[in-house]
Image 1 (cartoon, rainbow, N blue to C red):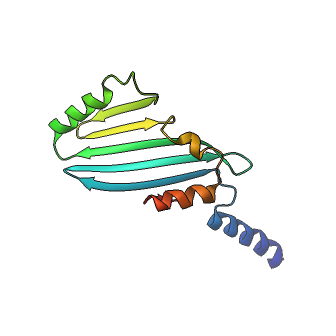
Image 2: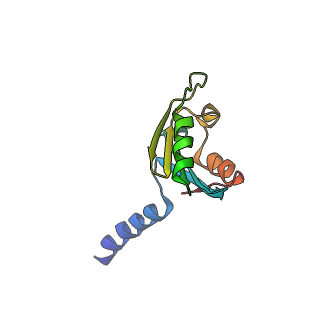
Image 3: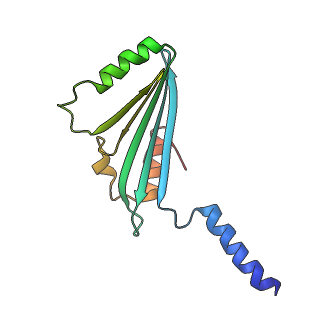
Length: 129
C-alpha cells in the first residue's frame, strides 16, 4: 500500500522541482544609477512544442526625487508616433512602470526554446526563473 502512495508523491515532487510542464519563464535584472533604481522583467510564454510564442517586458524605474520622476513620466508619455512599440506607461509618485509586448528584438526570440532563451538572457546579465 505504501508503494501506491509513495510513487505518485515522488512524481509530484519531481515535477514541481523541475518545473516540468511550465509554459512561462520570467527573466529579470536590476540596477541603480544616478538616483534611479531600475528593474527589467521579461515574461515568456511557450507553446506546446516548447517554443517561445510571446514575450512581455515590464520596466520599473524608481527615482530618489519626485520632481525628476514627474519629468521622466512626461517624457515617457510624450509623443511616440515615430516608435513601433506599443507601450503602457503608469506613473505613481517616484515610480514609473512601462509594459510592452511589442519590444525591439522580440521577433528574434519567438520560436526559440526555453534553454536558448535562458542562455542568452544570462549572458546579458538576467536571472531567469
